[in-house]
Image 1 (cartoon, one colour):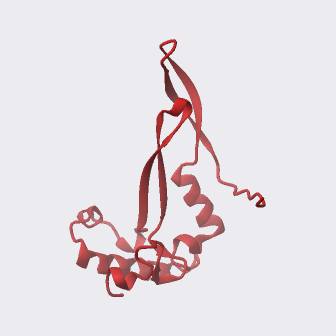
Image 2: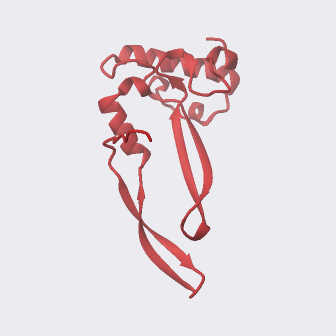
Length: 142
């Protein structure tokens, strides 16, 4: 048995239709969700280093330099990435992985679940949060 852990991330609810086959009808239900914006709010206030490559939120020059370097290196591998088609300050663009997986919900109906995590670990640019690229230098030279 493991000890429980609570993280103060605000849970939202959304109204969703649930189709029932017998008898045929559509029920509306309130479904809990943990939006990414709520996770980001929590991490930026409590554990910013997790999102900012190990840097503190108030050390903007360091984390901005890290993200700028990441995107400069990434452009060499994938210059067609949508982030480069915008006029954005790339030092403010947090690179994240997004993974979608269809699970089973009520009555074994498919339900899409989305997971996300920062590309750069809390250990900095030399480390990656992807087990297939544990060292970013295998992805591109740092």
